[in-house]
Amino acid sequence: MLFTLLLSTLAWCATIAQPVVTPQNMALGGGGVTYITDYNANFINPANLLIKDRKRSIDIGLFSTTTSFNAVRNHENLFNQLDNYRLYFENYDEGSYDVSMTEKRDIIEDHYKRERLLSVHQANMQSTLFGLSWKRSDKAYSIAMRSRVGSTIGTGRNWYTSQPVVRDNVSMWNQSLNHDYQILHEISFGYAETLPLFNGLSSRLDRFMIGIAPKFIIAGAYQNAEWKNTYNKAATSDDVNRSQTFSCRAVGSISDVTKAYLEGEPADNATTNLLPSLKNEIQNVYGYGVGLDVGFTYLLTFGSDFSTLNDRVEQTRKSLRVSFSITDIGFVKYNKQGIVYDEQSQNTTITTSPSSGSSSSHYATDEATEMFVGAPGQYLNYLVNQSNTNPFNTFDYSEEYFSTMLPTAVNTGIMLELNRIKMMGDFSVGLSNNAFNTTKLVTSVGMELRPIKFLPLRGGIQIIPGLPGSFNVGTAIETKKWDLSLSAGVSARAFTNGTYTSGIGVAALQFHL
Figure 1 (tube, rainbow, N blue to C red):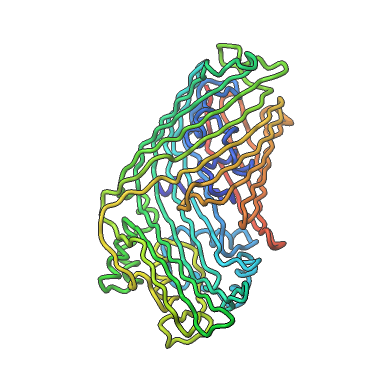
Figure 2 (figure 1 turned 90 degrees about the vertical axis):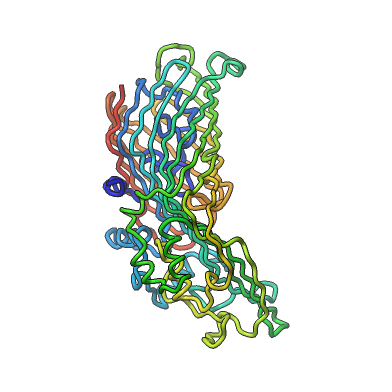
């Protein structure tokens, strides 16, 4: 049932590494640390709960879904892109990821330009199942329920080509393979208030707000696997130095599949027999946790806007907002034993490199015949089928309980509001690489215009170093009592002229009282 809800309002978008994505802020390029003021603010900046940007005291929403999708291969045809999208969330199915030599050359051209050795891709799904917020003159409260599925992969260049990258007379091959995957369900309670100590420092037209949103977390399947596997050969030497470091923590069905393989069952059989579909897996519970989202917003009104002076709920019309937030502070403790490979390293000097094509060498690995997309169960099967060495067999493991930190991110932004125009810019960065964030700086710039009061027109761009740029647009029908929001997007590789559909978003009705 939960999976049906998550997919029934399908929304692709190119915005990634954001604490929360709604159809509204998706259209604005994925920001929102200053813009979002309803119950979704719990997850990005709860201080905004107190901002009165509309004439209402209560917001109620039942359903809103988005998914992000930064694919290895993309298709300009909408229906082919939809089939491509499914590969990232449905269980591993051998034969569905095969790539030709031409397709591998395209992958190198798209993702490994400028001799990049590693390419990062993300796919995630977020659904706010229910939300309620209500505002008073100096305090605001909210409750929101959210489910999210995140997947981040890192794939070395030489899975798709045998040609090395040469730097300073050193030939380098990279066949690393990383995959972070996590399912989280959250119940968040938001609270915001003004701080009188800071208010009025410049005039009575400003307001400093602080918000906190503690949350209870129900955790599903989890995997954090990182295999750094590189080869280096100096021009003056016949030796190839191979370095590999492996670590992995997995719990849930992914762990069950890995354990069965280590005990002798073929990887494909274990995947088929033990890995449930996402529809069922998303309902499994493997742990619990607690978290906190916290934010600050400075609001300065000017001109004829005196909303900060009134005790009653009055809409802001001309204002400058500056915000800062830290999201996902906390941890998850898994109550089921998982597979644990503590970080282990191995350095070897050999006489063959990955490009040799010598199947007799224990260390040689040919080009892969399928692309790696991070489908559930693919990581193990990829190493079994595509690599001549498998770190799951090379290094030691244990079965134990463990805990993980939440995907903490730091966000900041600024927004200028002039009656029916809003202009904003946001920055967000994860403190670690995980299923939902990377440590790359995400820059989002957006604008909202209202040619008609109830019809906002939104547009924005998002820029992430080394990843596709996204160009998003959206609109809505916003009446006094209810809203219906829509958004769409087109993405383009920063390194090519090709574009592809990346976003269609629909939010269920939101009601205002």
